Amino acid sequence: MAKSNLTERTTRQLNQLEEQIGYTFQSPLLLLQAVTHRSMEGSINNERLEFLGDGVLNLLIAEHLIAAFPRADEGQLSRLRAKLVCKEALARIGKSLNLGPTIQLGLGEAKTGGQQRNSIVADAVEAIIGGIFQETGYAATKVLVLEWFKNLLNEVDLEAAQKDPKTRLQEWSQQRYGCLPEYTVLHSSLEAGITTFEVEVELKAKQLKSTASANSRKKAEQIAATQLLKTIESNS
Image 1 (tube, rainbow, N blue to C red):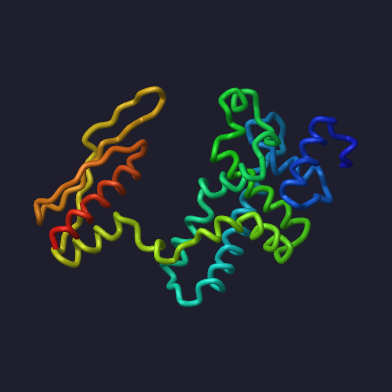
Image 2: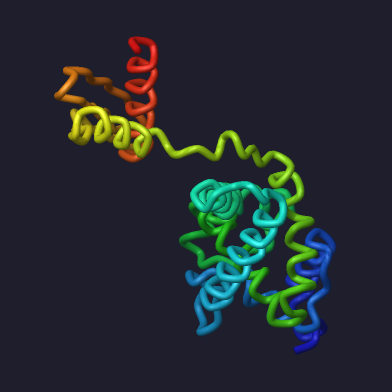
């Protein structure tokens, strides 16, 4: 499908996106598919390309980390990769490429600001990677994607790739006392469309506890675990 067969507005958007990503698609329709969310009416959307791009991205980031950190263990490499390919990181890449305005959404998603929603932007980034891989293969895709990720890769800190606070607290508790920390949701509230969770973590063997609040249960548990670890370290 030639670009002349697309609407003038869509052609202009695709041209601008190609300039941003540093790649001109042989098939404009493939790029259009990569930026088409499932909420758009029609049979073509970016879910299959997203699936492909996710696999390609995980492989090329893993390969890069293996080369960049020859002494890192499997756990550190896994945590670094997870940080680089998470929705937040991918959304940051997509927004740096000004991807949002090009994403094709159904009316409902468009009205609720879907073009800037992290999950939608991140999925489109993966779909574009999948499309580029289909046209050029792995080697060329890797060069291009690593350029997109250059700033994020420069921020990678191996020292920070330690185990998350919940895992550290669990291992400490098991090694010292043969028990696990217990997490309890003390309270949850919904205000202005945002749910807040108040969570308590307790080490009953030591009669130690900590509470924290966040907009997700997982985040509140991590904060509570971090606080309790600091208490343990200060008392040891």
